[in-house]
Length: 575
Ligand code: 649
Image 1 (spheres, rainbow, N blue to C red):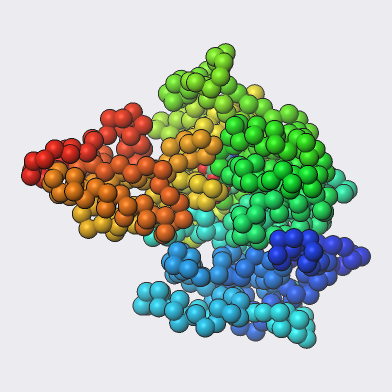
Image 2 (image 1 turned 30 degrees about the horizontal axis):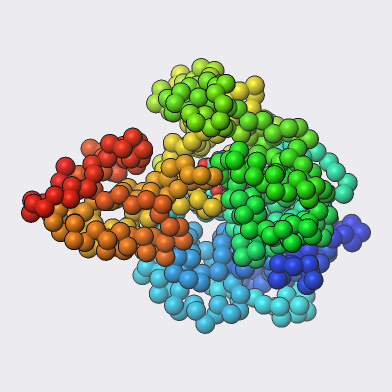
């Protein structure tokens, strides 16, 4: 990656990044590749002075140009970048501390305004964890006299550690090599084709795989300009995304399903009249299930602005595969299969002619598997490929598959080097934990084997939320947190066990529900759609005492979970 930036900076001046600091085009700041290389050089020089080569460097800046400069500075210095965010707010501090503890960085790059919070943050780190060096940067740092040019260091260390996998209590850093980063760009470019007038736009968080490997690195690799906006500006006013597309004649953009919903429901008629989406030729949609209902509503609302659904590229990927696994071919129609819902729940792919949506699952195709990669649909129990027409776990092999989880040989072997039954000496696969099927060479994602919950583009780990639930009220014991399909995305459901008598529960139920909803919403930023309080023993467990979330979910959906026994007896509640 650093060599690619050097190459672009040696060519005649061209626009690399256009940042919209307030989310509008009025205050846009432009950087050429030369600007980017110069700013990155200052970061690299300081990192070399601090002897960070071959060490890990956490990037804790706000989204923006400095973030990109610091990222490439870390590459130039031959260090491993750990993309993160400023540790402000309770949730972010806890997550950030768990990352720092796991990867033991040499340096943390943060904004100068964070300097006064360091003590507060370090108090979160357990004793015995080495205190990292802080490198505070601001405009003055970047605009100062350029330091001596950073020498090119051989890139033998991993390029990047991606923390999207694992809960706060158990973070897992995915190790990506420079080869992974480049092969991911090449695979996406195979899909996108070449366009001389390509302009990208993104508001995705730069510390998430889709924002980083999908937009920033891809743009530098491909040599086309990228319009950047912070995620907060998008979420506050989704119209800003579409206005930026209009203002800068953007041809390629991206967003998870929830972003399309936000636009449809929040853009006013007056705003709509100012939009022209006709320049868009590729609009990637991935990271959570692509809902046909959401896509229909978006098309209906924005067709008047020149939006053409042929531009939409439903796609699938995960950080364990650097990013990209599959996507619709550019310029083709979106393919949606109408399947028998009941059959699908039993793992069978059956087309249905039934009208309407009752008993029908509309599954949007995530397109063909990336060039140079292979997907096999596998029965997770027997580890044999399933027959055509069956749902199974999605296994991936190819150059995008990452190196493993930092310092965790067990989970790495389990997830990254799986073997099909009877082929122990042959190719290894990444087990994605996702469920899907292949049809005519196209991948359809139908569900998840792993417990991960994805809401509004955020990955939530049930064990983190379960800890919050149990701390929310003194009489709550076990809990199981999972998601169910909602209107257009996933809905969060909490099942928890009350320790006490039925009489006590009858008296305290309102208080319990309120405490659970308030703490989960405050700690995790998601409001549970339903809270089910049952007696002790209501939640199915494994023999070793682990929560069986999928079994709990099944019982909840079927309505067979032990209900609240609101009898007036004084016997302790139990199953
Ligand atoms: C998924 C990332 C998909 C993710 C994105 C290609 C400007 C604009 C656009 C541009 C360049 C410049 O969520 C990425 C491929 C973007 C090209 C943009 O080009 N990673 S994750 O590790 O955080 O989560 C992975 C999990 O999310 C779920 C699965 O459970 C997966 O294991 N997921 C999906 N679930 C259902 N349907 C899908 N399509 C899903 N994609 C991811």
